[in-house]
Length: 418
Ligand SMILES: Cc1cc2nc3c(=O)[nH]c(=O)nc-3n(C[C@H](O)[C@H](O)[C@H](O)COP(=O)(O)OP(=O)(O)OC[C@H]3O[C@@H](n4cnc5c(N)ncnc54)[C@H](O)[C@@H]3O)c2cc1C
Image 1 (spheres, protein in one colour):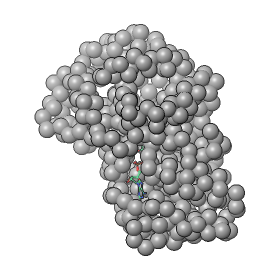
Image 2 (image 1 turned 45 degrees about the vertical axis):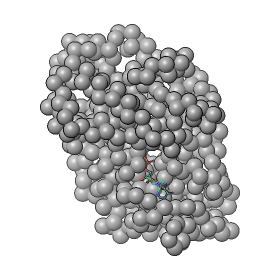
Image 3 (image 1 turned 90 degrees about the vertical axis):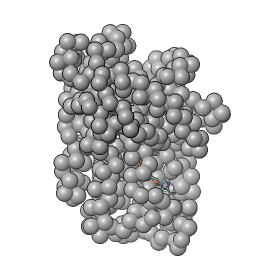
Image 4 (image 1 turned 60 degrees about the horizontal axis):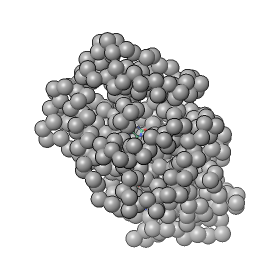
């Protein structure tokens, strides 16, 4: 790997999702000149429609011991939390094999430790960036509820509660009556719940990206609407980003293009096994019910968040790549569940959305230098947790380019870990 010629001055960040805008703002604060390159408007990718939950409790990876046994049943249930476009199976098979390998108990423990290290200080990192945006009130610290429809559902999750305990996550277990009292907006279908106090959410995932992007512009950053097609590579690594218009010269580049990062990363030395877990949401602008905190069902992979723009009910996973059209039946499942969860929910005029989680098979993002060029930083693959990890990732990216210690061991997030 070549060493940086000198401290890079002009950094081009590719992608204005939550990871890109946080990186761009943190780089600006660190003294760099920064151009943020986005082919659409900021926040139109996965960051647009997610559950907006932010917290340090998300230390359980997606692939867990025992999950693989449940997968065939899940795939046979069209209303279940997991769907596969069968035509996409040959493409995603290598990813699935790595996903299976990541579900081994020893690996799950290691991944969980790496998730916890990255999640630690998520709120504080957001507070620092939001202060630059004069938008400290964008986050609510309400805690969140994980609900279970059966006792057996909670019992099946016990080993993961133990995993969370080992990572220092605090929680309280509620029985049916305590849950009724705690969150009266929920229907009586839930037998148990786990309340995590150290969790919160952004009032609106899109607005969060927009206020950070606006602060970036106000503080001298350049937001440029263009699609990155590739790089002009010099002896020390990328020296310009190629777009449909003129090349954008750079001393360093950050790839934060979410689920679309793989091809760009390949050009800079490594194509990590990045794929997408597609997710859906339905949103109710005037829901007529008002849960006071986000509610998540582990059994169904569905999250309901009371945003300022309405009640958003989203989640589930569809493996189908970046090109296939949405399957709106998946959104209908969310609508049905929303009605079960919240009796009295008003569904008129609801909107629906599909987005592409940028997912690595081991639930850990890629953050760090390209294995080939010291002036190319990878920051993608945050899967189910990109919103909550966005600010911390941005600060780490800035520290790496400034030659500062990012404050954690970066080995688990390396692009060449597979
Ligand atoms: C249903 C659902 C619920 C979720 N809930 C949560 C949650 O509650 N909490 C949480 O933490 N996470 C959640 N997530 C995950 C989270 O949304 C993602 O991890 C996160 O948004 C990824 O951010 P990103 O910036 O990496 O990617 P994106 O937001 O997808 O941004 C990538 C950007 O790069 C741009 N781009 C791509 N290629 C190029 C190019 N060549 N040139 C220029 N621009 C380019 C795109 O236009 C896009 O704007 C959820 C996801 C889904 C789908």
